Amino acid sequence: MFELLAEGGLYLPLVVIIIVFLTSAIKIVPEFQRLVVFRLGRLIGEKGPGFVLVIPVVDRIFRISLRIITLDVPSQEVITRDNVTTSVNAVVYYRVVEPNRAVNNVEDFRMATAQLAQTTLRSVAGQAELDELLSERDKLNQQIQGILDEATDVWGIKVTAVEIKDVVIPEALQKAISRQATAERERRAVIVQAEGEKEAAGRIAAAAKTLSAQEGSFFVRLLRTLPEIASQQGNLIAFPLPVELRQLLPDPVEMARKASKNEETEEE
Image (cartoon, rainbow, N blue to C red; front, side, top):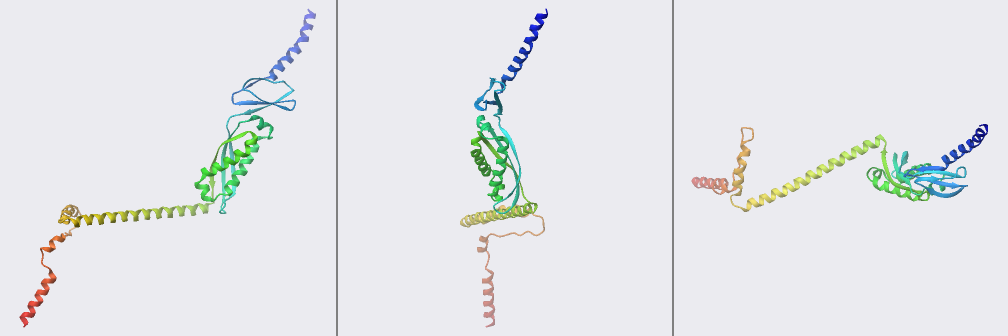
């Protein structure tokens, strides 16, 4: 009996060592991760997803996520090309496409990408004018993305998108921009009104030309205008007569001339 206990005591540490070894050697890698394995300091390569077996103590592993990483770039003080001090922040979306490079070529790819994004944002925003920052963000976003994507390619990183979120400008400049926008809206309103009056004048002239070409047209137009005149409030109604009626009425100038001749004849 004592011999069996002694034999059991010898096997127990061995069983514990085997369990610890298997626990350290067996790795389960999710679909969105990869293991970068270094064996005795030499890069073996990436492994996963699924069941991965490594050698404890001999192998050193790094878990790298392949999902898109959202990087919030803090506000950067920028002096634009037209000497306006602004504060600009952005968000960068990127992911690791080559885990081996992300581990082997840069010490901390997250920190390196964040610092590069800040400096690139300041550089691109400083080369643009304020109007471009406010109205042409898509162009600046693509420019920043291209610079970041090219610089991080050696790190095995792909920059998928860059978006400038906010552009903060001084309060005094905001008031000036507001006044400028108000003046621009008023200018457009005046132009639209002038164009409308020009078009209306052209149509009225065309209508007058059409009416003058047809005999009696003005009288028909007068009859259509009478209900509108009658609906107006007031005691005085102006009743225009058509031009054609002047042919039926005597000319007052000619009547005055005849009267003066008659008076001269009587005096003689």
